[in-house]
Length: 136
Image (cartoon, rainbow, N blue to C red):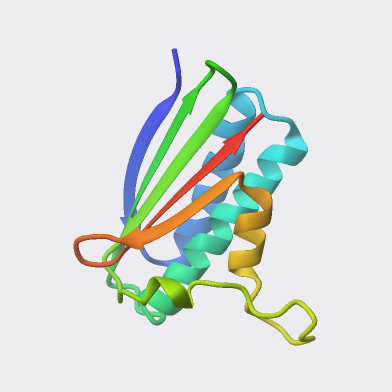
């Protein structure tokens, strides 16, 4: 059986540790190493922080819908989908800052794209949708 779960939770950073722990545990449970699971958890945390910061502009009133799916054939793969109802941004603006710029912030998109095998942003009905895939 391939694990699947879906959660809707407040766009509040107080929830993000719980989601990181859940992603870490589920990713290890399906067969990824501790290091790989930690990296995946970090990528999801970065996505959630970006949603809170940019989509909801620090407002706790929104919600986030999160889905975790896995499959084992033809290879082990997890797919996570995150949908918010925050502000939509032009898709071409979703990019990392230049890595040669030494300053805090702006590396979330770079981390997500580096850690995950696929990362695809799109517009949802009201907000944004991010689909990420990690293969082993």
